[in-house]
Length: 403
Ligand SMILES: Cc1cc2nc3c(=O)[nH]c(=O)nc-3n(C[C@H](O)[C@H](O)[C@H](O)COP(=O)(O)OP(=O)(O)OC[C@H]3O[C@@H](n4cnc5c(N)ncnc54)[C@H](O)[C@@H]3O)c2cc1C
Image (cartoon, rainbow, N blue to C red; front, side, top):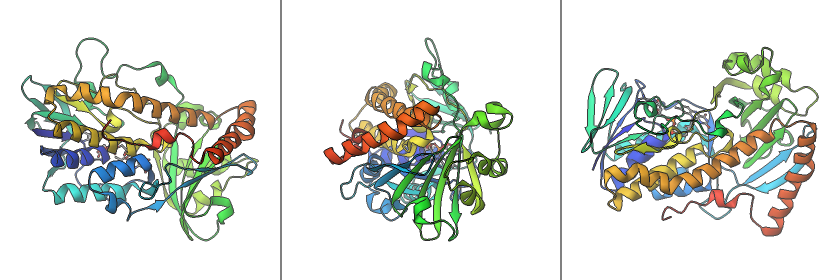
């Protein structure tokens, strides 16, 4: 089976590896002129994403990058610990890892090239067409690529998913949950010796600090490096949400320290000690109600933009690739792939999306909601985790490729 993959990101490269392993013949089209080997901040590959990488033959490779992150600590606005929890599965070889997006990208890109799969850079795809017995895409430079199946892996802003439609609810039809307030994530890498473990946690512990105007997450990489991201309460930014969602990195560098107020947040130091900051996912993405049509299949963020702070975007993209590969290996005909992917994936992805939305909402609660979160919900979750010897949402961290 020949496959054209649109988008050389995490989902696209993982799908290329999975399809190659399944005996298919993939080619990857990427819009950027070169490789994004040094772009992006850090992200998490959760236990389920690690399992997916193992299925792709990359288990050993992923264990050599990033930092194992098996614990999560949460704090209230006054800096008091509210919960100390296991993060993800605790089994050997399944530990959640925090890593540079660029490292994961490079790992997958190297594997794609090692397998001899062609990556065409500078190929921005404008549209895809299911032609019945084949499918094709058209690029900006009027090049046409034809294959048995087209995989749309062009990320959160997928232009591609708008180009195939038809009758009934289109792939961009919004669901009621799409009216959620936008969340802006600003992240960076702090270097220095000014921040103590008490302020950012020890290596391997993810910290969530719930401030009144800003949520801050940190993960210490080593004695002098801390990766972090912040989600500000956008309505408190001068000019309101409309202005805040369009703010650049340098604008956030000026704004973030102002949001600390009376809270105990290491934000000013994190910002001051970071050479650059990245800003991403500053809008709510419409969710496709279809994972494609016929021979055109969506995967990764193009199919399901997970709230970035859920820490599952990359993991679910990797899972999608493994499931797609398993379908092809099992002999599923190309025209059935979109429907089969939706059948197999949408329930799990929706449930994880809801988890992410819940977490996002918990960052901007009012006085009563924050008190409940800090005094009841999080300490309760820690208690339950201790009793049951398993962290919260354990189901989310288990990926069984055979189901
Ligand atoms: C450069 C970059 C940096 C990122 N940094 C972070 C980060 O620091 N932290 C974090 O949590 N998440 C980050 N993300 C998002 C994260 O990688 C994804 O949420 C997750 O891995 C899902 O991957 P995906 O492949 O579906 O989407 P992405 O990783 O976004 O990949 C989509 C790919 O498709 C390409 N593309 C888009 N449109 C077209 C088109 N029309 N034709 C051809 N190619 C196209 C894009 O250039 C990109 O390479 C980043 C994404 C990118 C692209």
